[in-house]
Image (cartoon, rainbow, N blue to C red):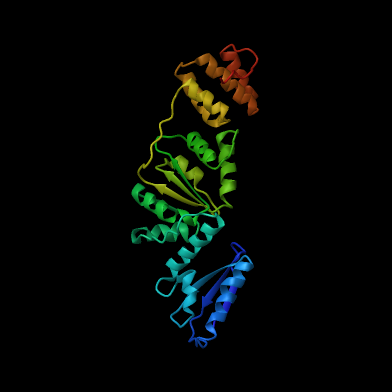
Length: 292
């Protein structure tokens, strides 16, 4: 009656029963009750959840529709996407119901970003719709506002979203982020990035990168010594380094900015730069100022 049953390798706790595209003769009704204990009761006792996928029109036990059932006869691609969402939901132990929405206008995004790893540039509205619908198909969705922000600011924001503490120069931080994303199924949304940011952060490997052509979310970065010290306290040194030089050039808290810059340069083993700052601003031997 059912020719194929196999373990799905993603979770190792699920079995897929595929009703094959052949003419199937159902057993007598008196035998039908024996199917349910095998497919559901025994499976549950073994810690296995059964998923049924109908790949072609045929007769099959109606009880298969009672549990997780996917009809792939009309649109196999949509069924595959729903099945993927179902697995991610189980793997992440999500309690919300399965999202079954697929907007036709997002088909290009699904094909380029969800069905495989890839990169695509779309409008902000299209990106928002896709994230809302397809977020369940990724381990993580990270939306980073980029409009009007520099590479260190974007990288610092992204690192914080990924739970990383990156104390190095921006080039080193970019390398570490990409080395993480290459093996993870993440949807990275770069919201209206400039060309430098986009070229540095489009991820290879399993992560998909979505670029918006117009900004959806805007973030304004304070240009104050108070915010610089907040960045230092969070060990976001690349952002602090850029901001402190900006304050120094503007003549804002010059001595304090130079002092903290000297400390960062020594932390990065940029001894010549630290010595130059110390000489130019007549600073004493470096000791990081109190942050609070």
